[in-house]
Length: 115
Length: 113
Image (tube, rainbow over all chains, first blue to last red):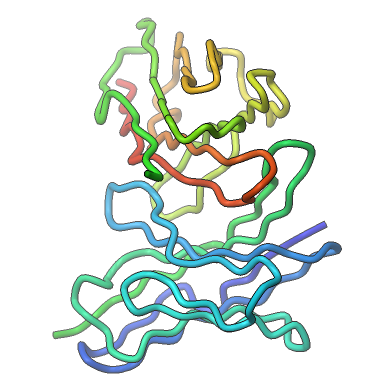
């Protein structure tokens, strides 16, 4: 069984300030963890993924996430927010299941960036 | 290249119409997925194909009919839909063994009148 909890449904930051989007997970397996971003009326774009290699994962557009097994967390951070970062962010836990991937989505965090 | 393409981008149909959504990838992925996403919600899995065989049907009504003609192509045939079926339909694909990452297409925005 697996589940993921995004602790904030909405986060608001000023442009140029740090971003923190929080995600906790639960999994009976060694999890694969992902962050996806979705801009309005668009598909999901992969930001980064953790698959049991380095615990600090660097992604696109300056985003990073740290896998902390002891805290079952996979928080997403960025040092300085840009206006273009305003979007919906989904934390996802997944595992291979016989030739396909079984995933569970978090409920999403909407990031607002204030000029 | 991590591109999944979907056509059409937008579709408006009546409740008696028959239409199809198309998804294509050329990454050699052998698993393909259909998701439905309502506004302000995460995507919900509908179907999974693995090696062109239907592996998962998440109790989707029969008015949605998936088809996987080959390893690169995935269709979703629509018939007699209801207004509540209006949503963003997303396709995704993943490699069966070397990666457990799903790559998503841009989606088809469906409106049922």
